[in-house]
Length: 379
Image (tube, rainbow, N blue to C red; front, top):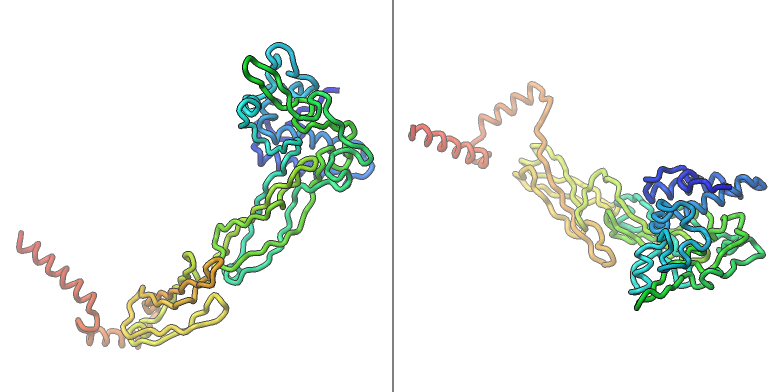
């Protein structure tokens, strides 16, 4: 029976991105997993098809070969010999050839034994400013590929073992002399693994890993900033058939705070004050990020926008004992919704005002008057 198109199996378009492939694979793998459908042979078959399709399409070079030659690209013996050693339809890629000749290129994350390294994972975690100040231990739940318990990651059904590939003798590579050079390419029969599985594990479909949700603890140190990346080595996806696991990267973002804006280790707080407080002086209390409070004293005649520095009241500097500063910026609020009495008092105050009470505005408008006078005399 002819094999289904791998793209149809994964229910994606041929133009699907790597992220779209992975998302669709995880969804279908959860749906058709044998553990969720015990005894259902059709589900078991579909699960194997899904794993096979994803195993090919997730690899850029194998996907390119499949797009060009279809399932024939991976059939036994294709490009295995004859003529110039490339095969009539050239199933290998230039990357494989360069890797064999110059010892570079390829780069599929496979070890010398043919085991594939698992993919790295990213997890976005949002924390509060207070949590960034104190640090915390957070628990994250991540759906990821883990080593299959039924086959211990071998991919073969319990009681059986993978067999050495007869095409490459277990090396995972094929060599062919070409003039003065020896060309080496990935074995098309075992795809570089050196082993083939005749009786795949029913739980993982031969991949050696299954998808499960894991709970991990993440230590967040005090002083982390928005965009900080934390690496958990070996906590990514499990490798294929016993390969090493990838890494997990936790990307931190900070929630918007009610009072504070952050710039590195320094904090900024904007406080509106009344016109009377600004004119006569006074004080007020503001919260601090450590959960306490501090008093800010306002001198007589404070102007809108003036900043007051509170030393060592900011955020901790990552991996040090130092702390940044906190800056309180006052903004003078113009009175609104005045009563008749208030209007009368302000009008009386305005009559009593002089250049000394409003030096900035008096000086500005004096310059404006001189400017206009100069324009009149020149005319």
